[in-house]
Each structure stands twice: as structure tokens, then as C-alpha cells.
Length: 170
Image (tube, helix red, strand yellow):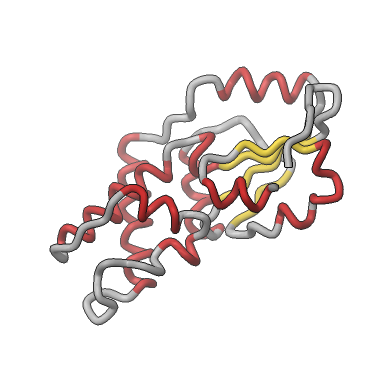
């Protein structure tokens, strides 16, 4: 559902940490694809992004046979590599985010971050951003947030980078 919105009518912004504030979704894809190559399997971007609505579904159609590596082990390895890379190189916050954050702050609009990944993976990465952009709430691997706020939908702006999250928001 789309609503006519402006800074006078929006009370809350729900924003994806993984793909909107940062490029973590793209980095996860690169690490996942690297593991697939190690097992002589391929992974393409459309396949990845159709499963990327949640870490719970991200590896459902994994091209690597489970007898070679379990989904849990693969998740942990991808997240370990992502964290190690981020520790060495930092995590860049996307251009324009400073201005967006200042606008929301000046208009007293609540900011809620979501991540499709559990707290144990997301929180250390959020800390590495060095972000001063503290949300009023942070939902980890909990896409039910859209159900919780559906009655207020016309006053909420959702900024997401994946199709499944946008579908849930509507």
C-alpha cells in the first residue's frame, strides 16, 4: 500500500540496516558466493536476493550439498568472514544517510532499524559502523515488525532494499 506522505505525516521510519544504511547484503553475497566456488558450485545474484529476506531463508536453496557443509556452519563462516573483513576495512555508511538522519532528528521522527540477521551477527557489525545514528529500536531477524505497526502504516515510511521486506511492509 502506498500513502501520500511527507515529514508532517510521518511519525516513524523503518530502515533496513543491512542494505540501506550499509552494503552488508552485497558483502554477504560475495562471501556466500566464495564458499560456493570452493565447493565448485555457482550462486547468482537473483537467486541470492530472492532468499535474502531473512537469514532463516537465505540458505534454503543453497547449491552446496548439506553433507559437505551444514547450513548452520555456512551461516557462521559467512558471518565470520564478513566480520573479519569489516574489522579490517570498516563499514561504510551510504552517502546521504547523514542528511536523512539529521532530517529525521530535526522533525522528531522515530527511527527503527531492522536486520534480517540475528543480534549475534548484526550488533557487532553495527558497532563497527561507529554510527552515532542511534535508533529508537532495533529489530533483529524479526520481520513481524511490519505486523506490529500495520495499524499506523499511513504514518510510517519503510526504506528497504529487498523485495520481500517491501512486500511485508505493504
